[in-house]
Image (cartoon, rainbow over all chains, first blue to last red; front, top):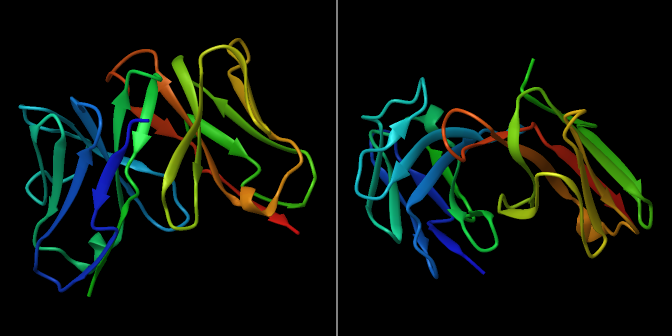
Length: 115
Length: 111
């Protein structure tokens, strides 16, 4: 089936540093990738939608200069958390639409801890 | 009021029990998903429904479009079914194909 590989699965970084999270579609072309954030005991919140070859669309309240999304190819989308702060500590997960079977596939998520 | 509401928020059952998780939504949708999130965070898509009923193994999902309601049933529950179950809808208008999520139901099945 369609698989999205997400790395790293967890990362601890110091305040002020940047962290890059990658999502690769392994056996299909992901023209659209959704990036979500999930705080403990809360539901997933859409941060942005990235389309291959064009600028990402960010949800209201999400700083595009802080959460840089690149979707340069049909198999790779990246989210870079720049100048990370402790409040950015969260679970980040990507998702892509698939055609057969019709639906969504999710990455395994990245747990980010900023200290 | 959230667009997607799930009940119950938490559910504890004994192994073998029949389980029902409910989802109500207030917007027009083109499809509804049931997702399973394991303790490590990984998410698996269980079903996508736009009408009727689907069955996969011990899992059954139903949807009533007129009543804007869906249910996920688990027959003969097992401790390995313990996870968070999330209902998510795709709106019938607006941004294409982005999901709106319910808050999830934490299911614990005791041996």
